[in-house]
Image 1 (cartoon, rainbow, N blue to C red):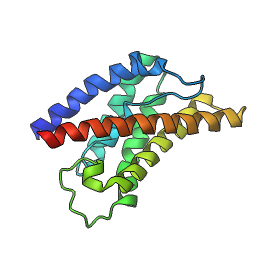
Image 2 (cartoon, rainbow, N blue to C red):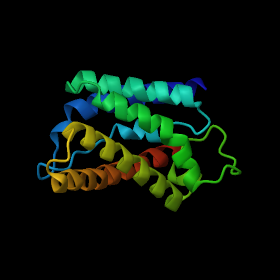
Image 3 (cartoon, helix red, strand yellow):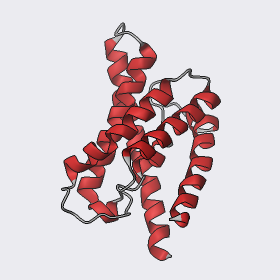
Length: 172
């Protein structure tokens, strides 16, 4: 358990500052923002309790809000996403499968189920964040374009991160 806690602490210390310092400034066509810190929430173990995962989601969102000067937007979206993580996971993987202490990945869930799970999580986060950020539906086309483009951009980066991460775990 301590090895797992150290891994997620390192992920937290790596991904949150990287998101704030690097990835928030890599915006494609002034529309798509990569949200790589979501890998932290997506890769949490399935057996982690809802209270713990919700608290970790809130802490990750609050840390990002402090770095990015976004008053509570990321904290709210991360908290809701962490709360919805288990029901979304069970949309794609039956409750009968033995996933004790496993983190969602393409190896533990299967590639198709993992990609659907990750796409749903990223799309939900992007829809919440950009809707709250806009706080209105003034330019609905731009809102939908930002949600779709950021979802696709983030999805591709998270899949790349998962591929690199799962290769390094399979070697050790």
